[in-house]
Image (cartoon, rainbow, N blue to C red; front, side, top):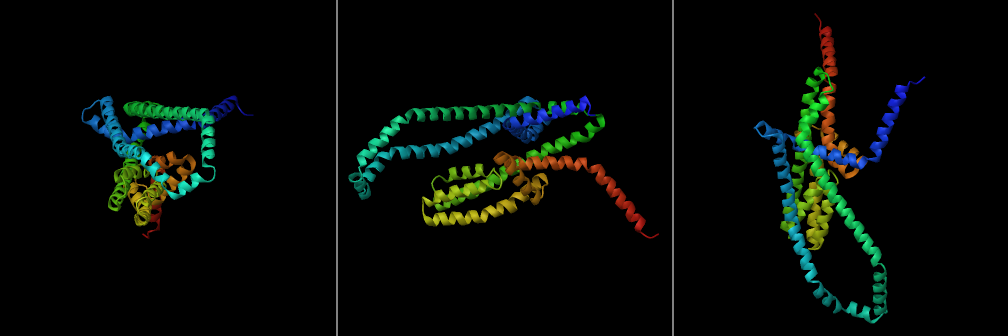
Length: 349
């Protein structure tokens, strides 16, 4: 016979699993906010140790990060906007040049060009309501994305301000011995998350520097913008650098074939160096993860959760390693003692 308590426990567990599956996107947002908050926590703790209040320190650190992001956006969007305006202003000239081409004159003189234009305008007029609905839907999607980013930012800020309170509340359910044992583990896990995020940013800065320098030397348009795009894409481990390389190559093709070939060669040299040399070295020093563990964590998390999983793979792996190291410490100590005793027994008197 299965008891009522067991059935109730199974029912609650199954209900939690169903709710987790249905709200996977929300849980990922909460987890991402928690990772960001833990990444900034050592900076806040440093200010608190110097006499700052927790709330003030969290606001200053988070405000500094927000100011850096806004400055990055302004630096990037300025040249891009100038290029867009230049293109719009040159449209009349481009149209006049196209009209002077022989192939365009032949096209307009044959093939019922006027009828095709009228048909296209008629179909465009008929599709305007659908286009308006699509535009409104896109605007709603953009508004929803901005709202999600604002919610994520405030959630990160609140977690950053209340992290010690949340930790103390969770440890309050544990016995004193468990609290003394696991409290340092929590702090080590927070340090590992922060170090992994800093390592990811450091690798992205290296990739952005290489891309920006190459673009400047080859005379590509807007090397600063290309550097920023490469750095942002490189935040995605393993695959982000490949996407950035494709963008750089396409831009280089607009300059010359030689520039595109040189760009491809530089990226073919740099990407293996980053993926299998820089990436493991930085993370091994930052979170004490081996190259094998780092690459496996990124591949598994990326296949399960996509881009977000790939970005959060290393912090998550660092936390798991820290917890497992402490959980297995008594067992390892006991086995080491047994091996020492076995060695003493083997030594002849």
